[in-house]
Length: 120
Picture 1: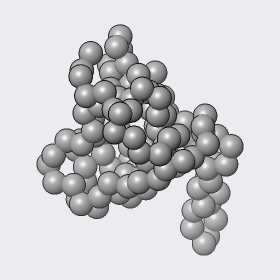
Picture 2: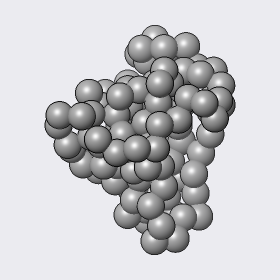
Picture 3: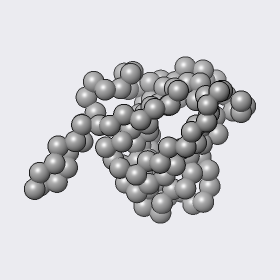
């Protein structure tokens, strides 16, 4: 099931430093980011094996998630909050603010055969 983890953040007079260090349940094999999104929904799939970590590093967005038995909507609005999306989690991303940048770290390189588009 998708779940939130809080990333360690150090704050002082110079600003904030958020660290991703030994907190993800996978080694990172791909990084991509989504930005400049209009009112469209993104995603609309789940995976056979890819695990993802989604962080809205600027602005905000929402992620709908369904794992086959439970549905949730996660509101990502802080760069210190990370949503872990497991392979069974069918998800869409929506309600992007105009300045939103959603960074996604993935456990696998891109493979078109890893995608499952059918909803539960």
